[in-house]
Image (tube, rainbow, N blue to C red; front, top):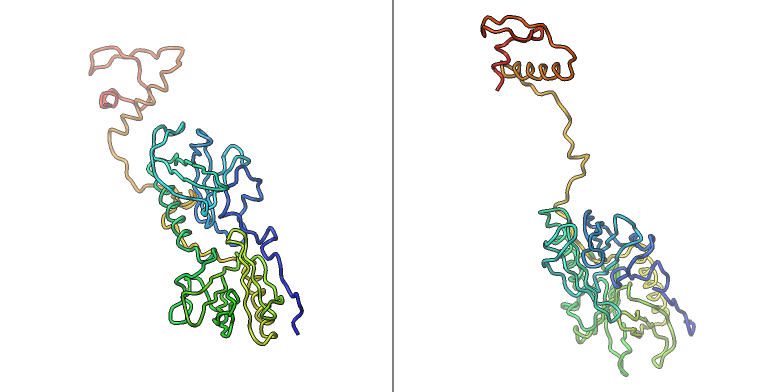
Length: 355
């Protein structure tokens, strides 16, 4: 028999499960909040990026992950920004005035968080490098087009011919028929799909009557009594609307099995979340170590009077600098004059040949 309350509550209450990185904007966070959380992947890092809006003249590093933008000052890591993609309204390229670059093209990021709007301006101090613009815009677009991995969706175009339209990184683990949705007084018979990223239910008679619930948005899952008898109740986070969705399966023992299965998938997901942002940086500068060319001896034969003449003149200047006495004069038949005695191995012809 199923107990009156068999529950698994506060699934997203633990700090390790609650995902704020893509939802919030935070200023000057501590070092631990700069570290990537589970499932967060670093896509690109750019050095010599100026925070032109808030720290004009301050050089730093911009880290682009699958969840947020991180700017960290080169002078002090205590000066930093964490900008979640979910808070971004628009990204544009416009002209800005930078203390380090002057008037130049910069990345303008307009955001909204906690009923306040913030604008961030980032300037790449490396000339003729479009990486700041191309990478940030492409990653944000990949995030924005993969919301089904992270957001609860009601009545979406997610079912075709009674089958779930799978996401690129999604795997279906179980398909369960005979699931009643208890949102209406009479209930609606439908089907569950349990995958590696979400739970989906749809009505058998109306495919557009459906709900997609990512595990990341589940606040609680429990079995409790209702006017229909024992019911599987799934509560969602406040950021997804704070819904309580009730379902029923017969017999009750089967519902308890599905309850345990959902909790198991949620636990696996929490260990290694799939956020759905797929992006590969095609062009990144190679590390300096990879660009070093080993030194080798040139296979060149040096000929000529030019080299000898150059060496002679160099030797002459080096010898003449700082001397305390003049060398004895000698008669030069070619000039018909007395000249200072030359160094051994040096002739007048070699000196005259220098250009």
